[in-house]
Image (tube, rainbow, N blue to C red; front, side, top):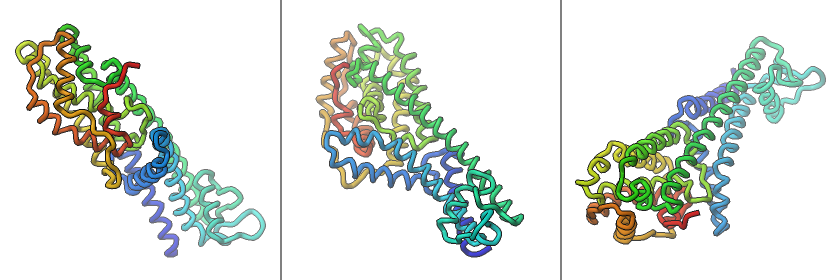
Length: 355
């Protein structure tokens, strides 16, 4: 083998390792090339979206699908380039067309490599030695296998995306479309009756755990960002974390002790934090961007929540200091994730009118 062919084989192995780690090993951040490539495309889309002003959100909503297309193209080009480096020295000798002269330039090698990765025999170019026949056979097996794996992976990604949107919509519906944790708490315990709240929160915790692991298995989910804030991970995580904080710091401990100490409340809080931490680790916050909204202060938010609960007939035992302490632990995480995904703080923490 020539040095060029060794380089081509190494390049193919590098891209195959990246596909293996991304598709089969399926843990966030373990890919060799894909995580960096995806971040690069995301950064480009964010840069392109900035001049669009109010329509920036609509532009960013194309990021997920565009990154999927770009990643597939990146893998295809990398494998083809590697195969072309292996094939080019054999053009005109071991690999020839059925008639006429054989060009030996790299573009021709790319054509033959691309054909051999998809069709045994390489189109008009045929292998004429045992080694090149085995090479064409190996290329066809690699091409067919990678295509099957990528298609299966995309099906799983979009299935997980549908589940994430369903959870986000469910949380939004439980708030009456307002995105207000206090409103959600009032609906879970109408008239102060929380007899069904524990089971409802358990269902939410199970769905959230599924979504958290989906983001760990399929990092492409990070880049699917919708124009409507109700579908944002930072939005429904904010509502759920605020809900568990309100349960812990505002409900009468004697009357509602069963709910306050329920395992589902702790599980919901912990799982929401794990999901946000996963996104935060793999979405390093941009230094050149700043949040344009600040949301209400903790005191204002807590006072409004207490008023909503009193109006719903819930017996409260306020602890302003405890609420501020707990919220200060997770609120910066919410803001960082929201900012990197192109949302303002006001979009995530504002109470919306019901739709």
